[in-house]
Image 1 (cartoon, one colour):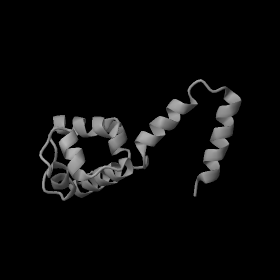
Image 2 (cartoon, helix red, strand yellow):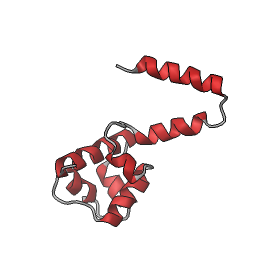
Image 3 (cartoon, rainbow, N blue to C red):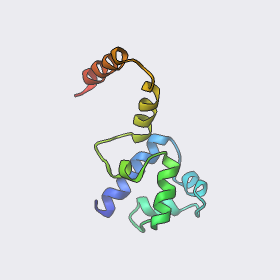
Length: 102
């Protein structure tokens, strides 16, 4: 993943969460321009900073780099919602999801 792709992924995930770059920066204990600097390809986060970013977004580092997964925090929410459902209900949800594919 290039620096530009990293920045774009962060921006998309942050916007999907509905939070400003400034608020996210402050929420993870950084200066108010921290996330903006990353999204504008001025800097990369440290490894620790990256883990804080993932924690804030509610995703794993693997999910951050899985660009096919557009909204990993919502995917996790969906997986949590289907826990405990019987096989028949899960099959129905799978059919519905396949119907949404382009």
